[in-house]
Length: 120
Image (cartoon, rainbow, N blue to C red; front, side, top):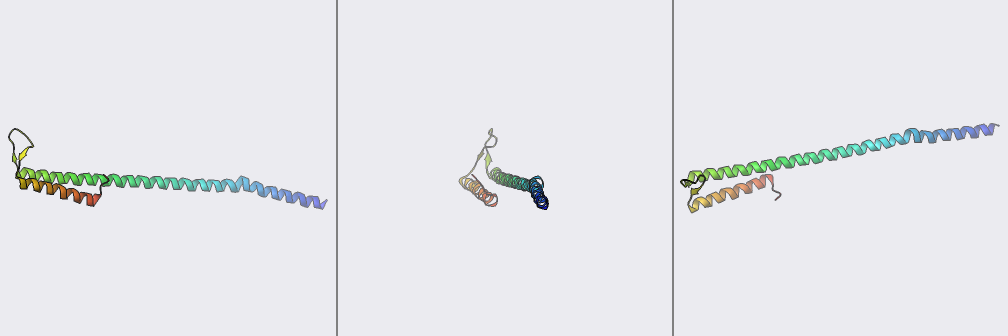
């Protein structure tokens, strides 16, 4: 009779161990894995948003820089050109003025590209 009790107790202990694994340990482990994957996805999403934000900021700086170059060019044109009567925004200019205008634009845009890059 005692062997039956020992065998029964052994079976009960084995069943409890298996039950503990499937009821408590395995779900906890799966939950931890799920949380880890969720954190990884959130971090990746945040990194992508930061990259987009930086890219957008860079593009805005590039556009502002190029607008500044265009403003400098137009100011030089207005100072060194003679307005054509009846045609707003049209100027008579000499060749050396055109060369300087081209140089202002070329050098300014190169500087903007060097500072902020250009993906075009």
